Image 1 (cartoon, rainbow, N blue to C red):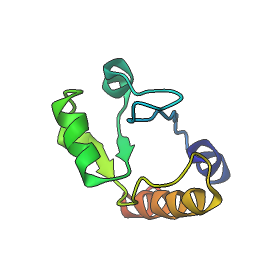
Image 2 (cartoon, one colour; image 1 turned 90 degrees about the vertical axis):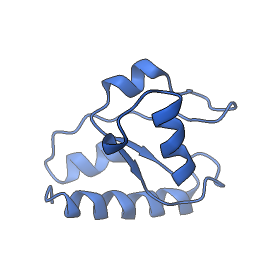
Image 3 (tube, rainbow, N blue to C red; image 1 turned 135 degrees about the horizontal axis):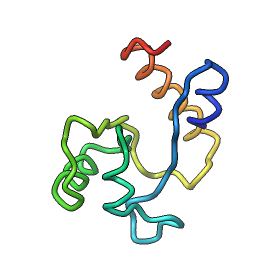
Image 4 (cartoon, rainbow, N blue to C red; image 1 turned 60 degrees about the vertical axis):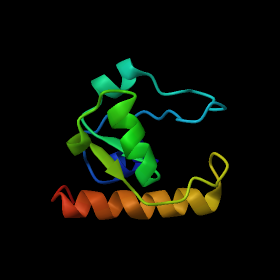
Length: 95
């Protein structure tokens, strides 16, 4: 989704995704987090986890405030995440 939004808007953004749950298909690692300029998480407690368990600067972790109750690629989740990404990009002056 992020790559598509970037391409549609002429933005040069590199994006990847990973999960924070034990059941994640691709679990996040400290190395992944360290390489990121920004980290988007679903819920506020995930911000704390990125800071405390992965040693990330809170300023680079962005919470989109969506309950993490969806299955991966759920159409409702994708629409909500897309809206949050557009809000973020506009707020940051990137769109």
